[in-house]
Length: 165
Image 1 (tube, rainbow, N blue to C red):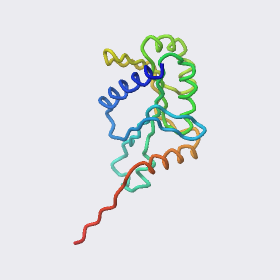
Image 2: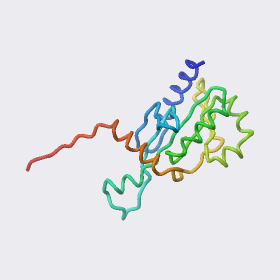
Image 3: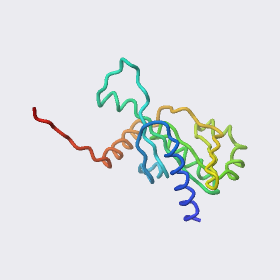
């Protein structure tokens, strides 16, 4: 069962990364202590206005973090996990196989109330159906979001280059 879920998630990840329009960074198995471990996270930057300054602080304010949970069958457990990710993410999604997503879609009001997206994915045909996709909003806990950003920053390798004139 774990292997089946892992294969489903890898197939979805390949599809998602191939069609994702926004420039950004992705990662697997991203956990924030006490809030769970998202199967996939996507960090992108919201577009700024023409007059917006281009500084590290301005860029940090435009970061949008999407957390994705994938499940094969237990959509209720997946919904609970995806909801917890809203504490540190701007948007949270639950991805299920099409048949399971159809069953879960009977509870769209619950997904909307919790502001968790419901997507169905068929790995055989690479078809994605988005039953609901919440707009990015503020994470529910600013400290949790800051913790998530620090974890992401610690895993990136930034190098300083200098040029002598």
